[in-house]
Image 1 (spheres, rainbow over the protein chains, first blue to last red):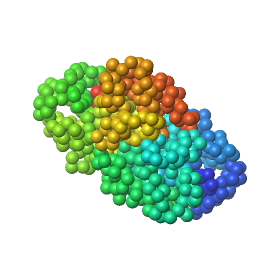
Image 2 (cartoon, each protein chain N blue to C red):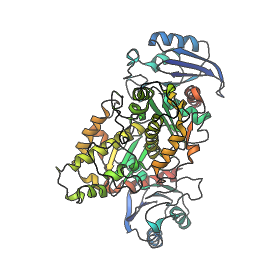
Image 3 (cartoon, one colour):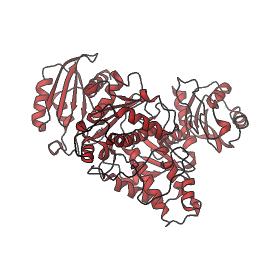
Image 4 (cartoon, rainbow over the protein chains, first blue to last red):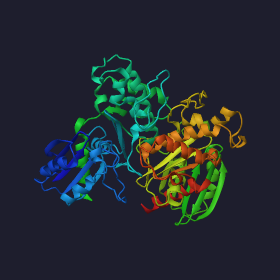
Length: 286
Length: 286
């Protein structure tokens, strides 16, 4: 059987599936201390004959196989998970091949294998929620370099007359500092879910999100951009973002048709865990 | 023997080499009309038993193998080269396997194989000259998606009090519109080569170039960034860019050490043609 863990900052989703990625059992465990959470993870997987595992983790994480801290969660603001050797502890318990990447890379891979990017060889998955994070597939493979992308933190052009300073503790008005859920809330003084559909702030959000997508598109040239996360539950954002992106690009590059280019996640909350299962399957086939 | 063409907007560089990429002969042909230029290209290659060829072209070009216009130069401002089937004309003359990509992708590949990114599996090559163009290597392969990157046209945050509008005909103040050679000239009223080393404009250039590199790094996570092109002949830019990039990133991501991360091209004007030869070699091995 294949095992998968989507290790998130608020919960760990664990699943086992057969070789066709049909999920046999799936549980959700609240993220407490590493010891507490891993005890529950072990209790779950101990009951199955796992032959390989895919792990997609919140980060930043170390994905450099040559590094002494490969497999660690590194400088996360979640103090109890700082410098935790997550992959190492899993490997000590289960001596099977394991894939290790970020939760958003796993989600991108899930959308590629079974979701909105099925049949493509490249895609971008972007989640806009409590933070902004992205994962990318290039030539059919997860993009890794000196580390993993942190594309929520790119800089964009400020909207004229927008004086909101941004709330990223590192970069102020990077994209995450401007459009993540907490930024939206700080900007208008209420939760995103409470903001009326015709409020000006959705145009502001679309302005910055479209610029981010423009930059990602010009760098990565993905065949499709899949948007997920709490903020993107606001369906009215999609047409606003597509329109603004088209305007910004000014027909310089022949983009795929907008409706097919900027799309909602097809797997919903399952893109990550399905991506992890797909990575486990691939690891097993190697 | 291996054949290579670096098809540029002002000149075509053609070369043949042995299997170890040792160049046997190399010529430079001014870019006139397609008919005139290709006649000279053919006269050169007709004398050699070429077994495969790598072509890196100015663009935009069509790199989608499923497309009816695969191998074409498409919407270039050089009217005589618009919608020209460059690859098709080469294939009609030489029935050998051919690799086809952009000039900057070829340069990135050249730097990876024999230059400043040797031994890495990822890199970014950025040229800042009459335009700004970039190519990227991800997991050892050239990044291609729905098309090729056009990363010179990303948007960045404007410097406070900088009122220069930018000169990109498509996007105004995208990176190319702000820092390419013609933009620099428009900003200060003289050619880059004439601008004193301590002129304020180098700080402005560094501010925007560093932001572009920040965005590329957060999206692509390249192990090394190789900078080439006329504007980057101004060596004083390197320390300014590195310092600004370090400040902007605010230690959020563990970057490689700056001196080793942002480097000048090692192959100089040869990165493109060497990349094309390396692509020809790879094509031949397949």
